[in-house]
Amino acid sequence: MAHASDGRSMEFKLPDLGEGLTEAEIVRWLVEVGDVVAVDQPVVEVETAKAMVEVPCPYGGVVTARFGEEGTELPVGAPLVTVAVGATAADGPARASGTGTGTGIDEAPAAEPPAAEPPAAEEKPEGSGNVLVGYGTSEAPARRRRVRPELRVATGASGRANGRVRDAGQTTGPAVRTAEPVDGPVPVISPLVRRLARQHDLDLRELAGSGPDGLILRADVEYALRAAAAQGGRTAGREAGTGGVPADSVAPSPAAPSDGTRVPLKGVRGAVADKLSRSRREIPDATCWVDADATELMRARTAMNASGGPKIALVALLARICTAALARFPELNSTVDTEAREIVRLDGVHLGFAAQTDRGLVVPVVRDAHARDAESLTAEFARLTEAARAGRLTPGELTGGTFTLNNYGVFGVDGSTPIINHPEAAMLGVGRIVPKPWVHEGELAVRQVVQLSLTFDHRVCDGGTAGGFLRYVADCVEQPAVLLRTL
Image 1 (cartoon, rainbow, N blue to C red):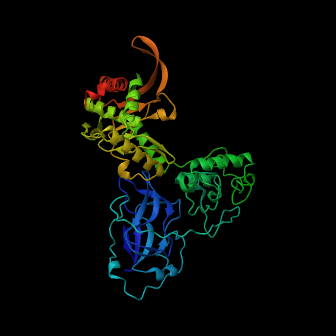
Image 2 (cartoon, helix red, strand yellow; image 1 turned 120 degrees about the horizontal axis):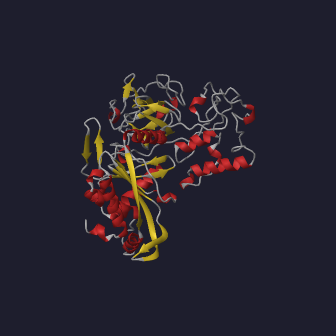
Image 3 (spheres, one colour; image 1 turned 90 degrees about the horizontal axis):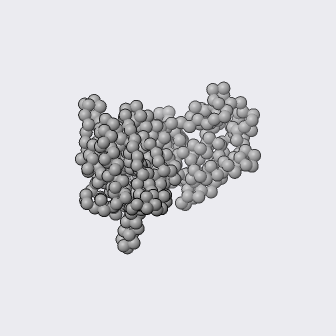
């Protein structure tokens, strides 16, 4: 994904991200024009519909041009940076601009080619080839980053600044042409936070993040907006209109309703929307559910964690129950090949689990869950959950699931009828575990009760199989010894 324009200047393009991904949004530039980069050094952080990842450049030299501002979506194959291969730090101040139009951030006059021959180690214009996102790159050295001085963009009512106009079609607010605020290196947890701030003309530099190392979270932005509304509608010291113009003096476009906000369906939210819509179109699903007494399961977990070993998560025990149930009812660990009109029963269980993050709902996948014990499952759930919240999941960790476990009890609800994660055939839902009146051994008692639900593809099995699966899961929850007999 690179192009040599003159034998010395190499144009690096957005590489094929795999998993059918065709575009990515620039979240943060990691280099400036004039910086010296090493082979395989990450130069930009992008967000795809699957994950947030750093893209390494396969060329070493001086960055002479960058293409695309933060927040811009680029298709695969679009130019990212131009690198003067073999140039040294002494060439950096020249800040040569790349060829082509580009949005050319920090563009400057072209640099003279170096007179001396480059070192032998740099004479590899073909690059390293390690450009697949999240795969195969060598360890990058510490990278240089310049913190740009704060920029204040002054605009008039027309929204024109520095010769560039941002079209309102790229925003989620009223259809008013406005200059895009420059967020710079302000650390935020996701592009969703930047977008929310842009919608309300909020300057992120004036916020103190409550996350690790001052990371600005969505909650920080929402709190600032509520506080501004309570103080008369001003947001972070700026008028809620366009470029300092009071909001009531800006006439909204007739095409955009003044009492609503438009949120683009892109990134993670767009991918989720597409997948759920496809699931509803293609899968004739049905749902069955049952209440179960989870008292003994909770006691068993307490006893396991009192033994002094690694703590076992409840979701890990539920995962072990799922894999045991799928071994008895393999029809539910399958997919439907619509072209061949065949049901494909899968050998291994790659267990997906729903994780809510600030970027939206994602479903990380625990590989070979059927071959893991409770301790291994606990560790893998914890690792994937943390990576999901930090936006570090790779495409490979978000695909390939064969069955999904959805613990919506963490939201304080009892039941749900979830949509199957296409192209899987079933999903087990687990509600909250709460004390309820329950008939136990012929007497009324207060027990820990949970509602279990199974949504399944009616093409792969009938109600008898689905009911058998769910009943077995409930029996294991009520009497964990049942699970031991199947291991």
